[in-house]
Structures are given as structure tokens and as C-alpha cells.
Image (tube, rainbow, N blue to C red; front, side):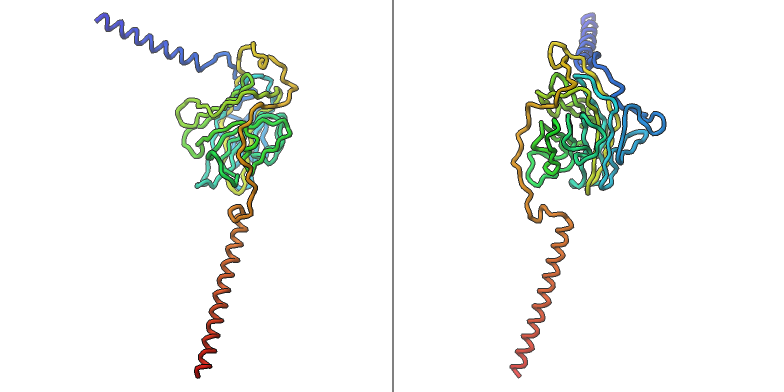
Length: 333
């Protein structure tokens, strides 16, 4: 009996020890939540303003979410932190939601998370400027490329730009991509999260989109040098295809890491963004002139013209046939 009691005591003690070790491994109490870079409900301060944040375009602020674009064609919007980030090492955790009525891949285009020098500049890259300086994480829901992909959509990818690179939206940015992964997050009925961790010149992107309450690594890239003093932001755009793109919360943590790495103590305020690694691009496929690459309106016009041509040919053929029949009857009589 005594042995059984002691066994239970040891079992309970072992369970508590395991929980303590697990908590210690996943919760670093030395990481600091930076409220000036975070966004939590309720959003509004005085009036329609959000403390530390600015928004533009078609962005809508409600009591429970910030909608970058509604499910309407030709819309774009952005949300930008107004305080530059001075931390060498940080982690950004974002709760988001992408949803709409579109089915069978007829929805888009997705949204982007930015850490860039400039902010609130509208443009063609998910509603933000091209030739940006800094880091972009693209949460892309629609494949614009007319050639084959080696991955499906939705797709999460990253890009580091020194201001000289063009993001080719028509080819989904493949030729400037650092790394990426597929992620099925659209139209789910539970919370979805993404985390971008920048630590010791390494970018790690993780997701919590499977309703399992845990992070799953999407990709990790070493050799990424980012300046301090840039801004966090979010933007989205719709074209002919649409979706709702919502940001629900943002939490930014300053990471407490070892100071023996030069990257953790170096003055990064004046460096140029750079990455030593890029994913191998797929073959560059030029746009063809076939009907598969034509716009829907042009294809519709061609089909109508073809049908009219067929009808005309049939009518002319019938008239010729009747004329020949009349000629034959006259000769017989």
C-alpha cells in the first residue's frame, strides 16, 4: 500500500516536472512585448484614430477587426505602425482572417506583411509600393503565373529588397523569393496566426492555421541582414477577384538573445537590407498569345464572332443548295 502511494507521488511529481520543462522551453520570460508595435482590441483611441497605427485606402476599422479590403473588386488598403522598430531581434505574431464567397480558386489576391523603410505608399504589390527597401512576407491566395507552379495556393513567401528589385506580381514573385510554403488558411472557422521571427540574421516564419494551438515552421532562411528603424505594416489589394482580408491582432516581442553574436549588438541603423540566399527560380515562361492567356472579354468576343461566322456559312450554304435544286428542276422540265 505504501509502495503504491509513493508511486503515485512520484508520478505526480514527474508530471509537474515535465510541464515545467515544457513551459520553460516555450515561454521565454526575457522576451518583451512592445506595446508601441502591437495592436490589440479595442483598437480605437480618441475618435477614429488607433494609437501607434495609421491606415489608408479602403481599410475599415471595426471593434473586432481591421479590414484591409472588403470583398469588392478594385480595392486596396493598408495599416502601418507609426513607430520605427529599434530592436535588432524581434518576433511579430499576427492573427488574421481571409474569407469570402469565391470558390474554385476564383478569389484573391491575398495580403502582405511588411518591415520597410517607407510606409503608407500605395502601389501594385498587394497595395504597397514596388522597389521597396526591407522585408516582405506575402500571403498569396491566387496564382497569377501562366506557367506551372511547383506549389499550390494559398502560398506564403518572403522577399528582401534593397530598393532595386522588382516584384513580378504576374509571376507571383518567384524570381525574387527567399523561401515559401503552402498554407491552407482561407475560409476556416477557427483562429489563424502567422509569426515572423528575426533573430541573429535568420528569418523564421511559422503558422498556427490547423486549430492545434501550436506553431508549425513554414521556412527558415539564414544570412538576412535588416536595418533597424524600419516600420511594420500590412496591405492588401483585390482585382477582378476578391476576398475579405482582416487583421485581428498584432503582437511584437523584442527578443532577449545572447550578446556574443555581432549581429545582436551591431549598429544596424544605416545598413542596406540584403540576403545571401534566394530560392532557385523556375523557368521564366513568356506570356503566350493563345486563348488560355487572353482576357475573358476578348475570349468571349472571339467566340461570338466564331458563332456568327458559322451561322453565316450555314445560311449561305443553304441558299446555294436551294439555288442548285431550282436549277436542276428547270433542266429536268
